[in-house]
Length: 208
Image (cartoon, rainbow, N blue to C red; front, side, top):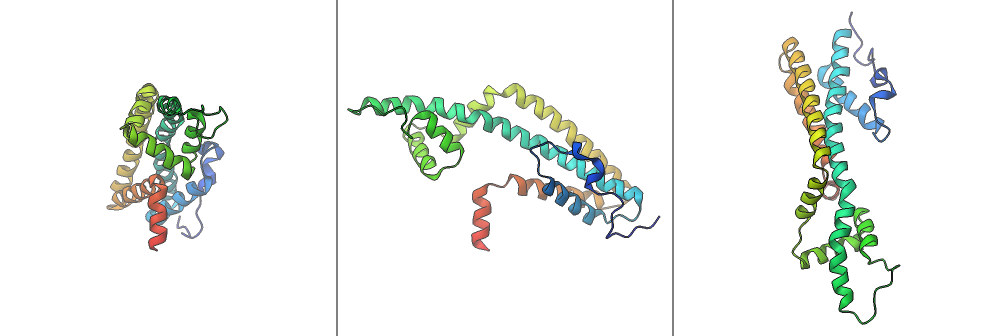
C-alpha cells in the first residue's frame, strides 16, 4: 500500500487521550509526531506505525526526565524557606523593630515569590544566600536527598523507557539504514529544547 505522505494514515490522536498526562502539552506532542514523521517519511502503513511507536517512546522518556525535575521543584520551596528562616531571624535580631508577619520579606513569602521567579525576590534571596555562603547546588542537593527514593523510582522508569525507545530505533534502523541515527538526533534536539533554561531562550531571542 502506497501512502500520500501528506496525509498520515494514523495521527497522534490514534493513541487517544491516554497517551498524555493532564499536565502535558498536546501541541508539543503533536509537534514531536510531525518531526518524527518528517524524518521517517513513511511509505506504507507499517512505517506509519514506526512513527507512532517512535513518537510515543521518545515522549515517554522525556516525560520521566520532566517528572524528576518536577519532584525536585516541588520540594525546593520548603528547602529554601527552611534555609532563609535563620538568616532572616538573624537580620531581625539586629533590628530595633521586628519584621511584621505580613511582610513580603518573611521566609515563607520570599520562598514563594522566588519559586514564582519574581525578580525582586530572586535578587534578594540570591544576595542572602551569597552572604551565607550557600549555593543553589547545596539547596538542590538537599532537595534531592529528601526525595531520593522517588527519584530512584523515576530513574528506573526512565531507564526502562529509554531501553524501549532504543530497541524501537534499532528495529527501524535494521529496516532502513541511517534512519535510527536521524531519529536519535531528533529526540535529543527535542529534549534539549524542552529543558533549555528560560534565560537561554530569552538570550537567543534577543540575539535573533
